[in-house]
Length: 390
Image (cartoon, rainbow, N blue to C red):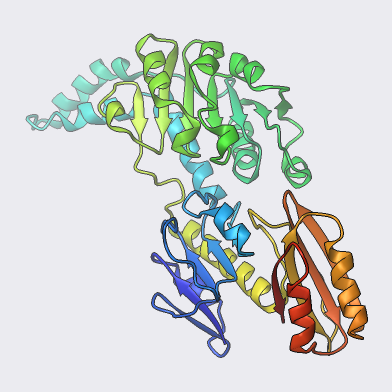
């Protein structure tokens, strides 16, 4: 019986993915094999010795101490792309709100509570509507920073609206490149993109390399009057630099999903309460994807969409036993483990080895169930982090 401890409110559709005959799922589970969570911060919380994996139902994993978990051989998953459509639609709403006089126009209409004559109100609005005139998106240039699951969908949406799209992503994966429309013009660096874009939408993960990526220097290169949209993470944008550039007129609007006190009430800021992925469909998609990834790892040792371990997947032959182990990515570890198996007369049927950065992960299918001495010998190999038998 596998045990999954949940944090936060997880969509029922995701929880229902776990077969009740083989999984125990709940918020008060002891000795869990896995955590399934949304926004719960794991920093500072005790890590059960039984813990094998953590799945975040969402893209960002800044609430998970990844480095600490990696040292323990705990695989951390996220769900990239599951909330992409929800964020994409909010980006469109943000661009429209920043371009047309929708919000001030609505506020003006709702201020006319003293009026009782409909004809009089219609005449007044006809007279005053020019105050809320704006522009159109068609023909404008959208610069997308980060061309992954969300960025590529935003690009398609903008192209369908008649916009020109330029993009920059220094770490564009092969899969992402295949998804990207050939109508998107790739920029060689961020400054070139900023100089061309009427709208700038950032879709990169929060990490050291992207911290304050949009800063004073970057904004100095932006096209005058550009609209900046941040539906990624608050740390990617230097909010103080944004406010300075809004106040001096260099930046036209700032639309974000991460309000800060200094921005409240600013005429050029459109701030939303972190609702980018807050749709029923998005939460269901993330929960289902997270549950599927946990089950595949717990039951077969296969890894997809991990943020700390490599992607690895190998089919199983009926009647075999699977050994998985993680290790520091240094030479000789796999060879040493295979020597252990050979010395113990354990016949290897199939195997796969993958690495990512400082970590490696291995799947070895053997002919019969290895004894404890074999597993102990593997665990004793230098640089081996964690061993499992499935």
